[in-house]
Length: 317
Image (cartoon, rainbow, N blue to C red; front, side):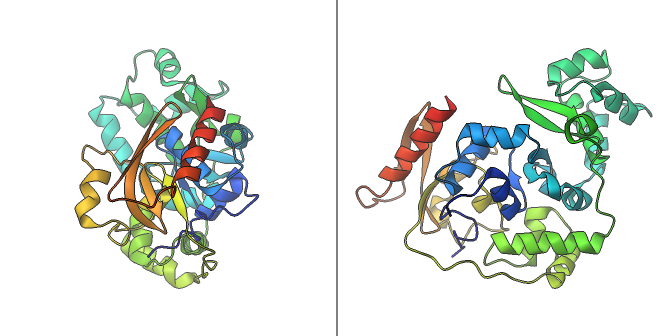
């Protein structure tokens, strides 16, 4: 069974949003409401406002990270994460598919972002004067991000924003030049937050080729997770690191229930965790929480968790 303690799901007291992100190495943030609930699952005291404050203060940064997907990372960790996770081959292909062409694409998007602060996609479309539309704009920003010139800013009216790294962080994101040092840091952080695991899991989580993941594994050392202190019951959000951080979910999800968690179409439902195993799915509408266990659970087992999710969502509202 995977260690809920290594993933901080036992909710050690006093952790800040930045400390949680640093411990996990990076936190999946493709969907912001789910990412906020991932913080809640690891802290009894963090509020949406506290998480937003860490984002606004640049302590945590939303960026393209492991597997080329959006993650929160700690600002101090950007150089080594950027060195190992940046890719431009897919970006260039997708730009071509969107009809965004030319030999000036990087200066085009960098110049459009620079000095403007966070901009929405609609803002960028207006400023790009027809050079890119729709997803072409996002891929243009991703090209700038590959070169360390862009990250994502906080949401504006629920919509993502994109910002020049110099405006937001004071300078470009410069990748760690010592790749071996970066690999060691990656594997050390990964092993601290993912137990048990192997280099194949690291490769699946990071997007690195298996050979590099194995090299990183050899450079690092395992850190045993803290001893469990009793049962851990959590309502984990969709795309939580506990589900995304390993190659296989078989150790925590019985095959006969997989279709309820992954119904298809890229959907991953929030899950009920009981001592590390997925025992059901749940959903929310406003501050109301609905739980669908795979089989009967003890009466009252989820009462505290449901109340805490409602508390958190009420704070957000």
